[in-house]
Image (cartoon, rainbow, N blue to C red; front, side, top):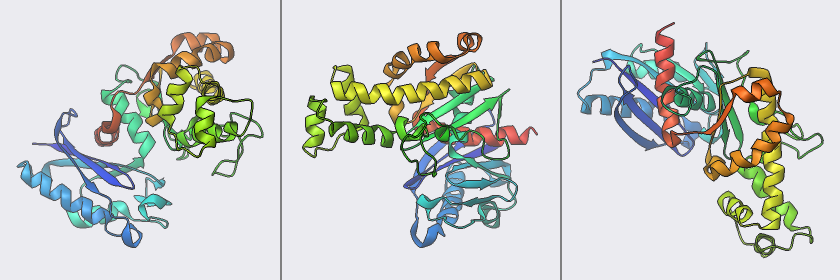
Length: 321
């Protein structure tokens, strides 16, 4: 029976799954990511666990249509390499495809940016399953994204979809990329926490959250959102600034790409409908009206499964080319 392997490779764990060609799940599991010794064992560990699970499910590796993998770092699609995935220990160029094929034979292996792969997952089985033109915005430690045009990933010269580094505030916070005012500095979990700590230094914000922060108590994004919903002055101010930055980013994406859907995923998106409700007035004020009427802002549906499903969808798309 023909099948596909999907891999969502992260710095702590690698999630893997076997799928039918129609993306019906056969088996799913995960293994720790061994980042020791510059991650030299990562691919061999993945190859070994794939062999074990293919055998356990009574499949034949010769029937595998291919392996798809979402990975952090800079992806060289033609060379089959990954560079700069620092959380994996892959500072230098790693020949990922060659390593897989040396261990598993000449199977097709496709690597793609992890946010792009998540977008392919939501396109196939999630919030974007009825769309051909969709943008996924991932709101986690940073802000990432994947752009789907006419059912295909938009790659540009290789790095299209770096949504987190769109400018949302001129002369804003310094970003890790070296620019200032990137939406990632305000709308990511990291950005929201930094805003909260900065605002807590301002004596005008005499609220419960402000007192917690001034007392050195650690808070997370969920507690900040919950406080904002309850009317906490500091939390409201933080979320107002963060979501205005995000809404302006979505407005620009809507004007440029005219998508059917913008899907919000990642940990910050667990705030749910609150995000959409708070951004809607800003979108109405700043977005080109015809495009705004055509787009739906929705929440991702697949959670942690988006990566493995998207990786399998990548193989399915490539096999049709």
